[in-house]
Image (cartoon, rainbow, N blue to C red; front, side, top):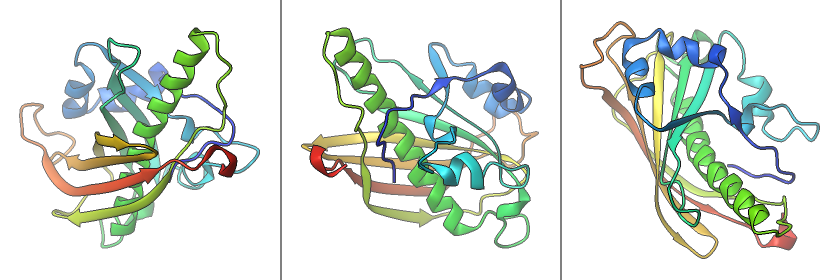
Length: 214
């Protein structure tokens, strides 16, 4: 689920937040793609309302989600939406189900969050576009997960990096359909040329509430 009762925007990722992924060959290769925006999602920012506290506080420990950044390519047209966001995470052992393997419920949570990061990137983009036009856009921008279907294909290893690639499929009114793939290398020392393993996939629909309801 992603919702924003007051707009707190994502920020450019710092060198320190990117560094853990640059030390891993296969994630470093993904980050080296041209024209990438590398961001710290706004859901990592603690808020007085406790919004986003799951990812901003509860899961932000050395034993859980040690590092997290997201990347996307900015569309050339101001009217176009961002169609794909990749979220990078390093996973601690505090989220194990079976020894050394990420709990299946956390996999679903990461898929939901990655989809929400894509949604939020587009909310922020639309907010900035309206400001540039001299409008005063509402900060009550957000959406809620209506459904999320997850297929578990391979185990996700902890003490390693993982990426979740979320893709926007279509929009109808207040509804957005998004898919996601959870990918991981055989090890963090794997060659950048080795194929990544698709460990899980997700398919979800998000719905934006009526303005008076958020």
